Image (cartoon, rainbow, N blue to C red; front, side, top):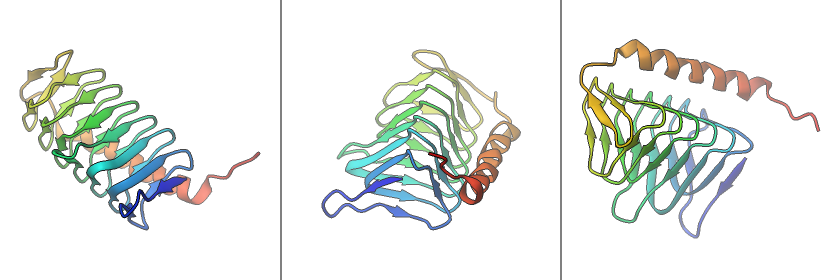
Length: 172
């Protein structure tokens, strides 16, 4: 795995977290217990802090970045899908950000909300608890998300990371 300090900015990765060998973590990044960062994901805390809570998956190819003015925070028990891009935003506990979606500066995804695959959540937008954000730019569908939609996806990646920690081996 590629984990880098940038000057005095040093990642803080919980020992129970899983970071895939092909993932990249740079600078002011905190990664919580039982969280996972999958191949091709980049978490780059160069301009400011990036905080990822416990039991959260940052899936293949996802990009997390920050700005000097607006840090990036992803709460506990979240799912950040394949190829998602988060920058300068807040994703509260038990939220799901779908594959290929973008969540930009000062946007907030509240607890229990879901950003659909390919959606773009523009800067300053709030996705309320239990709502779904769909499309470009994202339109909000209130009260469209059940807890199971997020919990099942989150738990599958917690379980998967345990398997990878114990069984992944390179063959070449």
